[in-house]
Amino acid sequence: MTRLQLHNHILQKQSFLCVGLDTDLAKIPPHLLGYPDPIFEFNRQIIDATRDFCVAYKLNTAFYETLGKKGWEALEKTLDYLPDTHFSIADAKRGDIGNTSKMYAKAFFETMDFDAVTVAPYMGEDSVLPFLGFENKWVILLALTSNKGSADFQMTPQEDGRPLFEKVLRKAQDWGAPENLMFVIGATHPEQFDQVRAVVPDHFLLVPGVGEQGGDLKKISKHGMNDQCGLLVNSSRAIIYAGNGENFAEVAAASAKLVQTEMAGLLPR
Image (cartoon, helix red, strand yellow):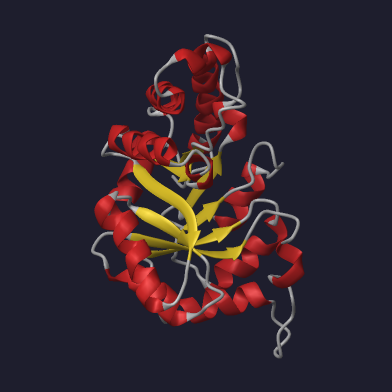
C-alpha cells in the first residue's frame, strides 16, 4: 500500500485506528473453543465487526508463534481474510545481519504479503535495509516504545545530550523515506511527540499504548499529527477483549466506533 492510498483511506474512514489482533486462546470467549480454529474464528468476527471503523490491523506474531504450526496457519488465514483496503502490519520486531534480515523480509512481504513489518534498529543499517527493498512495503522502526523498560536505553542521553531514540530517528532517515518508513512512538510518552515531530515531520508514526496502557488520544493527536494525519494509533485489548460473551464482536464494534468517532473530530479539516 502506498502512502497516498493510506492517507486516502484515513480521510474516507475519518479514522486512523489500527486494531491489534493480539489473540490469546486464554482470553477469547469460551464458546469459540469448539471451533476447528478458534483463533481464526475470533479474528474473523473481530474483523467483520471493526472493519468500518479502522484503517489497519496489526498482528503480533508472538501470539501465533506460541501455537506452532496451528498458530502460523491461523495467522496466514487471518491475513488472507483482511480486506485489501486495510493496511496490514506484522508486528514481528525482526532485525538481524543482512542475509538473515533478507529472509525475514521475504517471509513477511512475499510469502505472507503483509504491507509492513516492525523492525528493531539495534544492529544498524545493514539489518534494516533488506526490508526497505520491496515496492510499496513498509518498515516500522522501533524508536520510542510504550513499555516501562523503554527508559532503560531509549531515553539515554548521547554525547550531544539528545536521547538515543532521537539518534535512531535521525540516522534512519538515511535509510528510508516517508513513503516506506514509519516509526513506533509509544502513546505513553505524550511529552515527547513535539520532539519527535521536530526530527521526523513527514513520517507516519505507529502509536501503541492507547487503551489499556493509558495513552491519551487527544494529546497524541495534538502533538503528533501532521497535515496528512501521519498517525496510526493502535488499540488491541481495549477493543478485541471489550466483551467475552457470545456478543463479543458487537461489543468490539461499539468500542471501535467510539474511538473512530473521537478520531473524526481530531483529524485536520
